[in-house]
Image 1 (cartoon, rainbow over the protein chains, first blue to last red):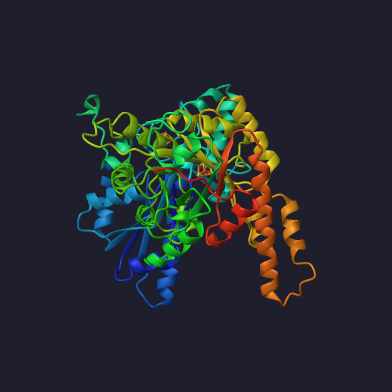
Image 2: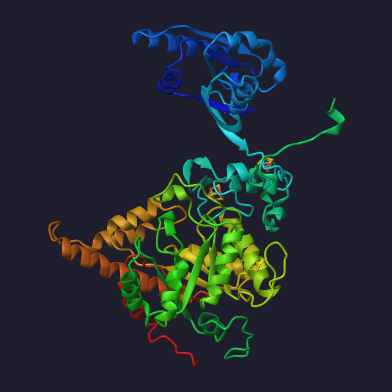
Length: 222
Length: 329
Ligand code: SF4
Ligand code: SF4
């Protein structure tokens, strides 16, 4: 899922300082599961904003609402009237949701309430870790199901580099070395010979480097 | 073209000729300055000139901005010293690297050391975006392909002069997983590396074991291995290397020797303590050189005394490696 983190209250307060009536719009999918911008968090942010603005003697017309997803028109369109009734929106969805809102409501300021951080998963309660960078050409079949693009600090195709020590990455002693993980996993699968093969220079044109990515599925078109 | 003992020369650099003639080679390292002052290079080059056969020019080592390695390599050529230009994958994509290689060859550079590069979080611009379009192994492949197949990385033909480098790489026998390290060298050999320099060696028995395993894989005839050594400057430096440098293995024995070196010298006498440490550091380094020289497959040593280049002549002398061989033009 997409993992995000709530922005500091101060920053959000600044963004909406000049607006009277503000909607805090939560999103009920990824950001809800990672406790950054779901219904509960949207409510909490709205009340924090109200309190902060009250202390400054400013308008406290802060309302909140949550929709299932801000990345699909079918969930965005039904809240047209609600959005029309406010001066600005703080969206606690990921960057995709914020942009979905901005595209639908052209004349309404939409502000991000979270920092969209990575594609990952909660590995244990309270700990979220990156797993994929959407490189567009998945090689997990070659690396024992461990992604070197996202999980190696240098996205090496032929690791581990000389900084791998005691299973940890040179960049951060808390972080497992992705290539040690790949090595261990291939050993368990009885596929260590894969480590001996040279992986060619990666084609990054399928990744963000190739420009905006788009998929057309004729079979799904109306 | 062939060398002194008939081995085919592919590039004809001094380093290649000495190695193929069977000399025990000594390479050094020069860290470019964090400014645009040419005189720094001239001064450091002066220490290295007669002590080593070729000199590595680091490429923004530890991700700190420094004078560019190609410019410094050219300065060394003008000073009559053979450079080994380092190239990392951290700051340049395949377009920039290939362009630099064309330029470096045109300027007379003939040895290239292909590296992954230290992560930018270690340096003075941790906010920088890193590149890592290639890694050290795919970089080696690319340099080899440009030379031997006269093709750019994309497969297009290089029309006209191709860049021809004697191709180097790095090995760290002390990184993990230890069992995989000789295989990693095998991969570099398969990619086309011709010589490698190792991470600083303090743990000689472990390095010996690594070399044995490389021998078991049949690598010793396929690649020239230069053992990396360097002088420890102080007790604090020894402790720092032992605990804080990723991939470095400094046995307690040397930390103790550095501690003992200043026994009896009062704390206040900073100068005497510094000198005692430096003497001991140089002595340990020369001892390690003598030990690694006896290990089968070690074709030379690579002395890393960055920011202490002045120690190199003494180390080489103490290790009994002077004078350096001369080559006929
Ligand atoms: S290889 Fe690419 S698509 Fe597959 S997990 Fe890694 S970044 Fe994601
Ligand atoms: S230590 Fe491992 S994860 Fe870290 S950069 Fe090196 S290979 Fe990648």
